[in-house]
Image 1 (cartoon, rainbow, N blue to C red):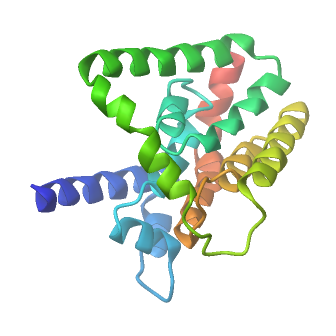
Image 2: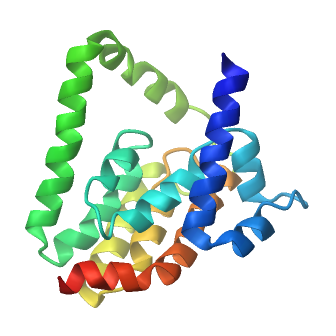
Length: 196
């Protein structure tokens, strides 16, 4: 039932948020004051927190890109960071794992995949709440940000690129930017992957 799912999903978001930014920062950003994008993201059961965590995990585990590519799709442009660095093995792993998930899930539920483009088109047709440039322009800017960031080894640009590339922008999308805190908090583990 929906209430049970929502309770489990909310608990998962809180645990992931605490892992990503630490319990103190998590408690602060979850305070229901004003228009807290993190609190509202959690309240509406959106996935901004999980997307931010996926961006942090993506520096250690290419499979994390599957979550971004199979939910919101366009934030996957952050992979351009690894392309700029010529980390072809990493890009190949992220791509193959995502394609593997698609193939297995298509075998299990092909009708769901056939129906999937309709809600995508409907959500893309929704009016933007913020007066932002069109998606194609934001995607182009996001790719440039990720490529330049990759060339300069600026990990934070992956988060900015994914943020800019959100298909439908609402203020809860700002919760993804907590990944910047996550990159700082988990920098030793990320560096350990790079040096190993």
